[in-house]
Image (cartoon, rainbow, N blue to C red; front, side, top):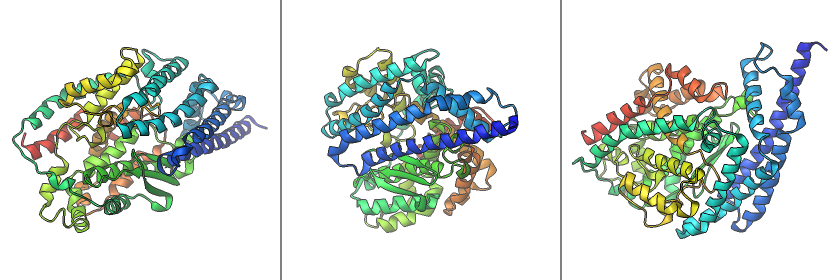
Length: 505
């Protein structure tokens, strides 16, 4: 057999093995979806054992001698034997392999089991507003994440290793600088809005809105955005999320009958994530080339649809008549300008997912600072609620009266996702810069949105972002598409223009 034929044989066997491992991981993802949607309450512990076993199998196969031999047979740099897509599969698999072999199988199983049990107790603690019920799990997660970071290794601090799980090739010091600069830019705008004399009526947004009719609007908007219901579904869960792959994408929403914006925009947010999944390159499904590049880019898609499109006046020029027809009593005397101002009202909020675009990143800064402090043992898990409340008072001027509205509001720490939160702010920054590029490439993008033609934007995003898989890092992808490295100025300018018009500042 010639050398070329041998290389091709090795690659073909390797990629089939990669696809097999992808199938195992997907099975676990859908068990997690079941846990958040239809799983009986008493099944948490047994489900934890199932997920732990599957995670262990996946880890053992991924870190096996077989995978090692495949990767060792490939060169360290592409010598021309592979297409760019094939090399992406090799490069990214090797990168994950090198990380995975550092993690003992016992820790992998412990993480999976803890995720299931801690999430179950988080639901109970949140319903009761009792942080003490969850505090031991937070303490355990800090211990687990600290051990994981030590196994993985890091450049400056433990958080580097955990951040890399969600935003590859990114260091904590880079995130810290971005958030610090963003915070300095937003402070004067937030202050100006708070001190503004503009009074925006919002009471009509919080009238009783039947859940089934809200879900009808969520599905209608998602379908218009381009969500393919033949390859996906929408369900209900306590905390909205998206999971799946190009041929089976599922997202959930939470309906609040006295809060119309929450349901509509949470639905658009998750639909944005779902469009990314459905827009991945079908040819490379079950391989790294058929996977999203990073959570920051993933979040840019959800925030772009939720905020830049969903909270624009152009969007509601098309959808507001349908919304009024669905809720004629609640919106009878509300014109589109009143509605647009109301859904963009800025005011400090206790709940992250309900926060407006001006204050949202303050929520992220708080969580980012607390995660680092917990890992660096600057604070202990048992005092986390107190620290949280103090920071909320300092940053927002408000403080929660119970843990459900404070430290227990997010599911991330129950699932051990330390390092995830900063990607939300990165998503905001990427979304504005990418939308600016799309506006240059698409003739009269706002006009298209105004007549309900959302397909032109969806196609642009699929062609420029979704279909690229992991060929480029998030930073490289941004620079390729926009011609510039990530900059906060596009996001800041976008907010200044929007809130300048609404509040006259």
